Length: 328
Image (cartoon, rainbow, N blue to C red):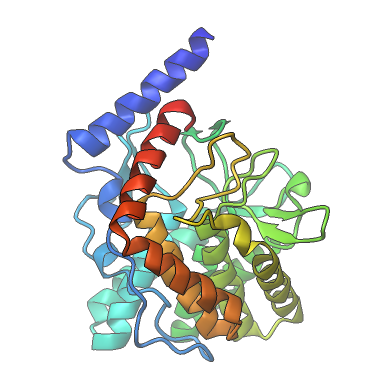
């Protein structure tokens, strides 16, 4: 009980310093306005699907090689996060494709090099990018932990840098990282198959799984990017299975006034913050562009209406605060 209270205190101390006191924190990287990149092609590897311009403008901490460090405050402090590193690289790759500015390409390549140098085997012998800090989620994720979202985002950057440079190290690393998406969680990967044979790529590896929606979708983008480059039958089959999972389960994330962040299994459902609700809308619009499946159009239009309704938006915010107080 004392340990639980201590963990909660440390969590709220970190949240207070980041959200209330302001200053530089991990939020400077994550919480911009999600936007679709209007220059994307769904049929070939070009600019990334989301614009990520606010991520390219990140003004926080960097190491001597120009790789971003996120400041989580509290006991965690400044850390490498493989997801933010990948997305920072994708942001600068977008700018390079638009402007042909070599400085942006150089920044993007530096992030890809970090991914090459930091892909490690876990205890089960599966190649993953580790988060080397504890993270308070539904349960504490002990360092080092890994995530489907990191795997998918890393692949999305690596295949683009390989396509540009033709340097084999980027393709070789992407192939290693892709293997984790085919391996079950119990065997060291990030794939969970439920009793209905739905394929879930899990952002957080907890039991029972929570099926975080935004992380799943971003990972699916990585699977699709890998298929675009390699034409791998395994990648296409995985992509198709994940899309089928979303088609059959997306309705579970709709609660008639807002979208859910995950399938938390708690009495109060874990709904999204306004940021993640906007992100869901953008991600579903992209999925509709990739697949032309009407279900994705149906829900991004529905959720956009929720976002534009002041009462529903206000109620969702209050609901979210209450959830955070009682859960995580």
